[in-house]
Image (cartoon, rainbow, N blue to C red; front, side, top):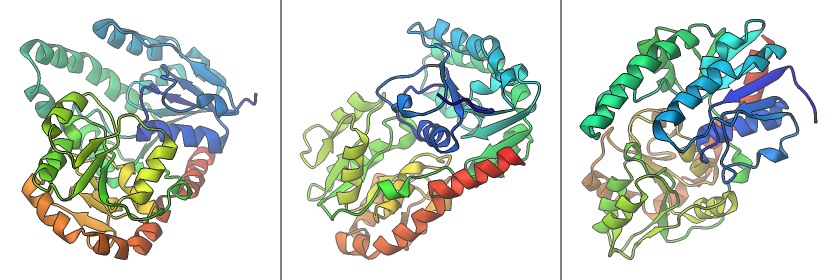
Length: 361
């Protein structure tokens, strides 16, 4: 096992998200050490990484204790960081460990400032019970100064999109450098054109998969495949109940995901003000256009009319239905070459080259 002068400190590998994929690629291609709060072995196979792995074991099944333990772990169990010349912090809680690395460079790769604390605070509170709201307000009052103090101690702040760069400036008053996340574009490729549209967004309220389902309940002649899981899974399955044209795959592996994207007509991705959004890039890498919400990171990845169709920032089911008439199999196939070319901008090689430059700077 090799040891590095650089370590990545990540919140947790709880599920297969874009942030976790980025950390995995960064460790693999830079050959650096990795420390993390905890891991769910159903996410990524970390054991295939050649450098040192450190599980800080911050996981707990008790809600309040889980939060306390997580924050305590990053603040008090990361003294080992002083052994490294460079520390790259990813996620929202790992940054609290910055005080334990006084000699060397502290690099924060920001997926976004915590949205439940800043731009989506009111919408999060709106869906909560009075007790949940109280807990949320108290947590923010405690955690926000800790987070902001930690971010101001960073030597370098990187953002994963111009959208996030703007949030960092607006909410934290800090400047950052945009380095787009990596997409293993060679892993995704055109296979054929099947008879379905695909949604790969995690099943949470912010991803607005309910609007996609509502549209397809009124389009029984068109098929929708939902290839993801999340806390809203049961609620969304109830919404789709009785409609044979809507299928949920449940949890799938990378090979199955690649096959589903490679055979789709197009993908549909309409989250609220997405930070960056890896799913549209993976879709384009497979030559599949994206039907997306016209806000957030999708404005930086999808070219309207060339590599997909951008809806309004808050699309309705009716608007999506109208676009689906334009996003027919023939139109989708005509965008294949442009999609594949566009995705290469966000390739892993560009990301790794820029990250190496930041570390050496």
